[in-house]
Image (tube, rainbow, N blue to C red; front, side):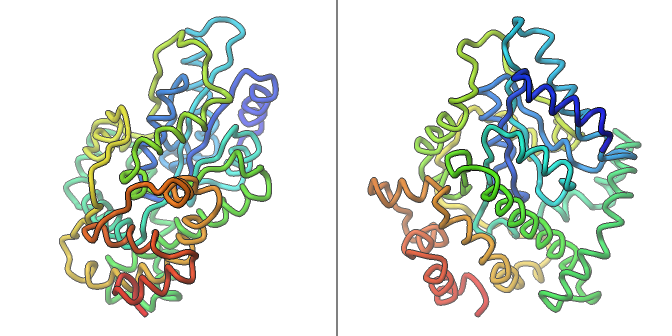
Length: 352
């Protein structure tokens, strides 16, 4: 990462001219909606500046954040700090980006989702985005970005296959499944590393865990937590309309899932989460096995004190999910990660 750009960002934070909340997450865990809603409370949102979609991703990362800063600064009264929400997928952030985010964030938000639902949704999205037709279409719209995205991810695929083979026993005979599974394993591994780093650097008051399923069950409580997160840096008076800054084309209207998320004005209580069925039966049959590997990392965050929505359920007697939302009901029935693992195995949510 070019030191000049990084130093400039750090100096802006040091002088109080830039303040930000950072959302760390795994795919399909409501990160876009969380960043959008936090950005609505601030001056704007920056979506995935760390995505490797350029020849030099390390250089592009601070440049994208600086572009957002300058766009807001141009319309802001003199002396008022620029406040932003920034979100990234943990596995795509290099050490320098992670260090910058955790060293200077006013608050770190970690977005999670029950793994069997999350992986099912991610696998379906990944398969859809990487069809031949979608790749041709993306190349026609943004050829350079799509080419660089493909180059960088082609370097990652061998690592995905190796992870899937080492931890799941999935090899070349199931190439689609091993690619999606290995990629998701890397995302969750990186999330655990980022979360441990945040706990070393920041007081717990500046860390929040937000589970996608629980925020749907308790949207008003989740909205209140978003208010509390931004309170220390939120503008006293709204002098400019919040802006959105997409770090790559997939976060723009070319992607239906991103376009829908980036129109959100509030968290919605939309009932039980439902797994997204992939077009390949082998993915669906494989879910309990994959979820069993991911559950320990997920439960570490779900039962952490920084997960205030769970504490809200326990202390306020908030509404509990019914049988239709079995994963969340089991998680709230258990008192700790060990109990949650046992319940998930008993109910067949994860492989024994």
